[in-house]
Length: 254
Image (cartoon, rainbow, N blue to C red; front, side):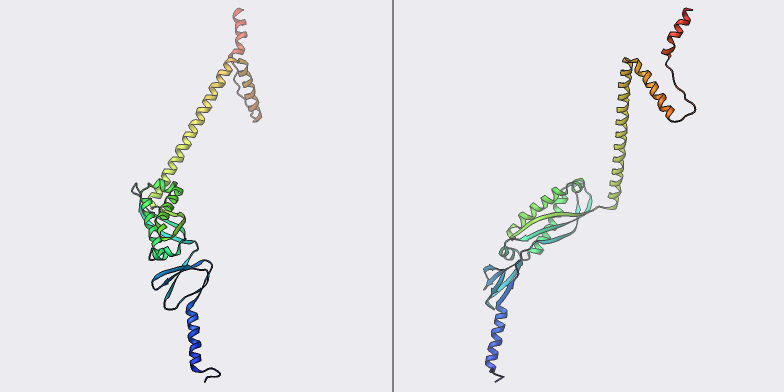
């Protein structure tokens, strides 16, 4: 006797405690348990308290939350033979725990490898300009391919985002030169368009003044007013010869 319990009683109590410790499992709200009994799937249980038969039942936990998968930089040769590095991030979650356990050995590793190869394949079929300017299109295309491929594994791809595109230094310099040349071209075009519009307006003004000779005199007076406002000491002001025609005619008659 040990105290009030005999040794066999203590052994039984210890065995019962060990049995309960190995038979009882508690799962969180975001966890599911795939139960195998003698090698066959019994059921998917959880969350909460689960009771197993020790030695007969085997439990595999599956996290049902959204998982963020970082796709490391991948070496890609684009369609126009430019070598770049592209990284991405994939968001997915397990929708069917039994399929994620039985249809693929390791769904996290499998999804990661599939995302890497798909990223290289999709970017390799596009030119560099498309990759840089159409990220939304690439994201949707990647999501569609990954979602279709992981559906038998019970996985839902919710979002794919291209995170970073690393260009070679010589390509960066070439693109900088191209951008600078493009800005200069636009500046020259804008300047030429401004000169064209100004010339067109001058032609329109000349045609209008031709029909109304007095408008030219008013323009002279406006010019004189502008010059006087600058406090110049010397003013050179042109006078149209038409003002002297009457005097010239009178002199000729005399």
